[in-house]
Length: 359
Image (cartoon, rainbow, N blue to C red; front, side, top):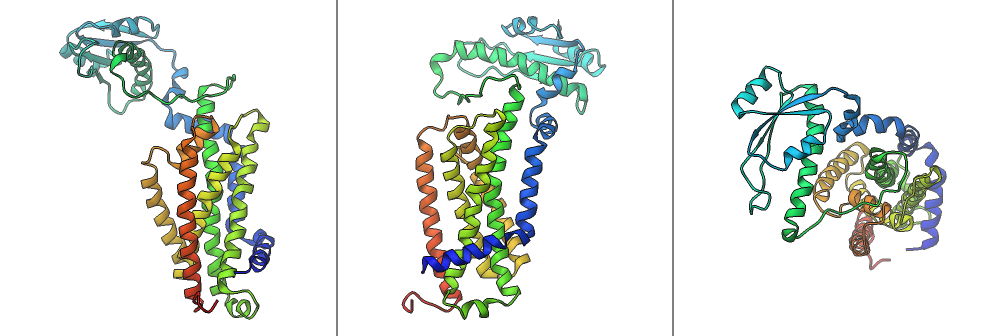
């Protein structure tokens, strides 16, 4: 294939992108997310982190305690908003049902250094707003007790949680969890998905507008035309992702920006090639977009089950906890992308009726 021909097609497509509704609406959506991230943080953090609503409650809640004595009692004693009442389990549940208590905790007779887990049961009133608040408050107490159990059983631990190096700031923990855990991965990966959808529009419109005959009358081959469109879409991925990484200008530190762009570009090219194959096969925009979107959802469901999935990897890179393993992941993605690129070229030649021998 002629690189000059590919460049000419890519230049033509880039100049005409302003008329593509897909890319225009996608950019406007990303601008909206970036501009109103502070407002989105309030609602989204309340959904994925119920602790966000804890500060709005100033009520003292009664909690029934049943079962054996344990260090958990000391954790409750540290709280001013929780009053512990020792009673039998049956009596405590009756008081909970009559709303005399906000919750009931049952602790089995299991010593902290026992071989098995300490199974603590928490009883709450179902479908009650107060239960959401008390659940968060007791969760903090249980986390303190869990820390004590970890210290007692430290010699048995074989794995440890991954620590995230959030910058020190007055913005609050929820703010940084939202920015690094959701906002940055969303803004960085969204251009790759948009470009993959865009390549379908660029290829299918050649069939719908019946411009292939005119294009094939030029020295540009069908495969070069396809790769020119792929190149135009791929250029958009690091450009858009790089713009969103400028969040650091607003005081948000993003580590490993170059590595993040490399991963976004490699993953974006893989999705673009996948979209190109779907477009070449179906040659009709609605069908191609539907099949690609459905396949993308299925693929992401499987990928999200992998420890180093794209979202997880972007978070780790942005807070500098990924380690050198991300280079191996990049190499694997690049290899899969190269294989998919070969398949795309072969299929484009087959669609155009051109074989490698005649080239």
